[in-house]
Image 1 (tube, rainbow, N blue to C red):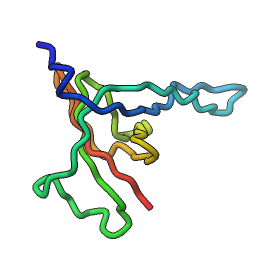
Image 2 (image 1 turned 45 degrees about the horizontal axis):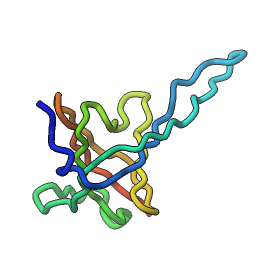
Image 3 (image 1 turned 45 degrees about the vertical axis):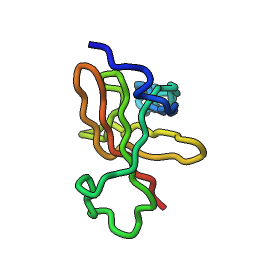
Image 4 (image 1 turned 180 degrees about the vertical axis):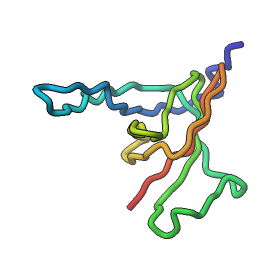
Amino acid sequence: MRLAARRFPDRILRRRAGPGMRVRGEWVPGPVVETELAASVQPLALEDADISGGAQLVERIKVYIPESDALAAAFDESIADEVVIGAKTYTVEESRSWPTHTRATLVRAT
């Protein structure tokens, strides 16, 4: 099942760290790969709010993307994706993927 494109009117820019490697024993991070994605950017609903970040949080939003595994949060030794929307940069705080789409919570810190 393919989701209708009109449901994803926004454009976001995902920044994801590419795979790194060891060069003469030193870890060299991979290049950052930028990908433009269609999305639906929405304010965080009250039931989605988790006040664990407290006053240091400037803004939290929710995005839906019509692709599986489109955004990744940090876990184990991986680095969270960054997302640019307009002139603001966010970090993926939480991400959940289904076969037809990804839902993620983004946070912009001070």
